[in-house]
Length: 210
Image 1 (tube, helix red, strand yellow):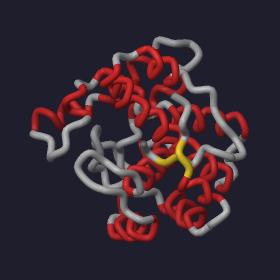
Image 2 (image 1 turned 90 degrees about the vertical axis):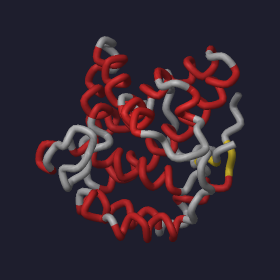
Image 3 (image 1 turned 135 degrees about the vertical axis):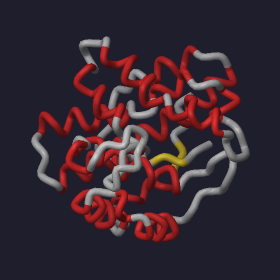
């Protein structure tokens, strides 16, 4: 199972994704467990970045929740695409990319979470204007920039169906080579926390909740 930063972490979210995980059929449940743990890891990293950037407490809570739920739309992506061990076809990639829209549609209708919807919709935008929706750097919400950087780092340092996890150093090297994708202040804070051994001591733990 995917490793998690959660065990012993200083904060934890009540995540409605957990209810989805607990009620799905076995194959989907296993896939959504991975999405759930990834969301929690991205939330912890995003929250730390936001704290370091001096974001207000109110916005901090919104970013934490949006990061935890950033991939909730994957519940509507076919399982054979989510778990495919090889490169996705063009049509499969189009479907996979819809998870941001599926997530937006799921949350925008819910009064508890509709203030998160845009952050989730745009969490695959990059500062070169080459994201899913081709937003320019100044059009991307800061929260989405934070979630995007945290998402990439956690994804790179996690096992995937088509590859093994990279080390933290390898992941940082990959991101450094593509640093134009990321907001400069956000990426600088991510690099700082990657070097905080205490913060990442949770990396070898597994979150065995299910």
